[in-house]
Amino acid sequence: MSQSNRYPMTPEGEKKLQKELKWLKSVERPRIIEAIAEARAHGDLKENAEYHAAREQQGFTEGRIQEIEAKLAAAQVIDVTKVANGNKVIFGVTVHIVDTETDTEKAYKIVGDDEADMKENKISVNSPIARGLIGKEVGDVVQVKTPGGIIEYEIDAVEHI
Image (tube, rainbow, N blue to C red; front, side):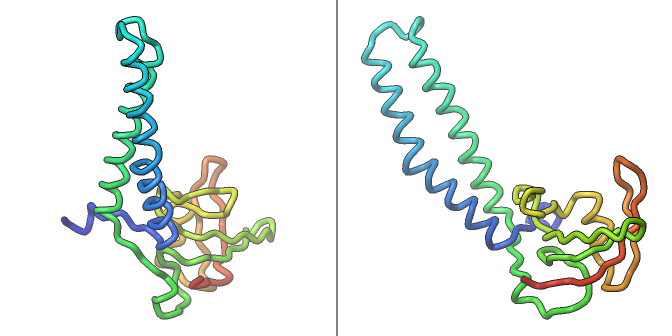
């Protein structure tokens, strides 16, 4: 598999996907199979809403299992705590930035697409802010194009946590 088809992922992101996959296979899949068997026992399948609902759930669950397995197979797990500390913004670091206009400070962890969660200040490596910061160093001022216009940030600190 070529490097361009790899999905960068933190160790936490990998664990979360593995946990979901295990749950889908060991809990959800057997529950749906049981629901289908139970619905079949009720007779006529054409007008059996429970059967059709269970089959739909089965399709969704099997699709999600395949999606997770593909992502895990293509994952490039990057543990930033094992990378030598530096001042450069790379995947997996927590970067502290200051809006040069408002002096507002923010900290974001740069993660894979599936791990992004603004409530936890985790931004996708493919987000405009992360793309603007990657490769830059502490002290650099970067301009990030956002839907609201261009915002200038100064990189204050980079943490490998």
